[in-house]
Image (cartoon, rainbow, N blue to C red; front, side, top):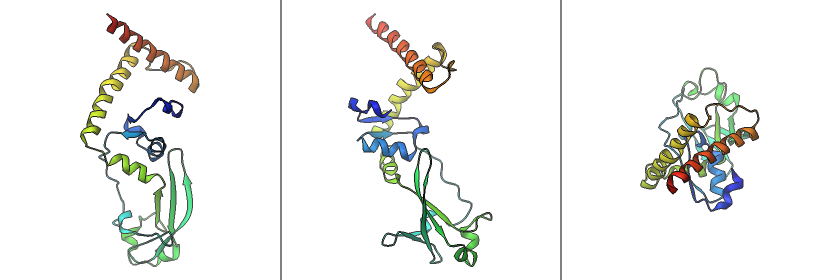
Length: 190
């Protein structure tokens, strides 16, 4: 993906599957605007207190809970598509807290807050959600990409990859895309 960035790409319209903070960060670092369908899903909390109820203290890099106790940085978490900082309250503080039922699910022993390291790139890209440019890019993506995918699946054997491995799958997809583009070119030339 990043090998093709030198082509002067300024913006991309992507499927919601790519709406992860790591992708937002990489594209942001390369000066590429990202447009993705707006996620209408609200986070589901099992408790009354949400992340917004905890105050961040920049001076000592901690969070303060509604009861005044501190959650300190314990570790950095890394997954395939995100990097987070994990803040954790002390077991003793949560065990003796009068707000325990509003803050912790029955299976939890102490409160944890994860902060995504790439959250600023994610939020910056989503500030454009609903704008005329956002709508235009998503319509173009729907016309050009989704239509092409449907044609490739229906007429170019892309419902299933017949060979194993990422290289074989990439070759299969590129050959299919080449066939579709050649057909379009011939059609345009008349």
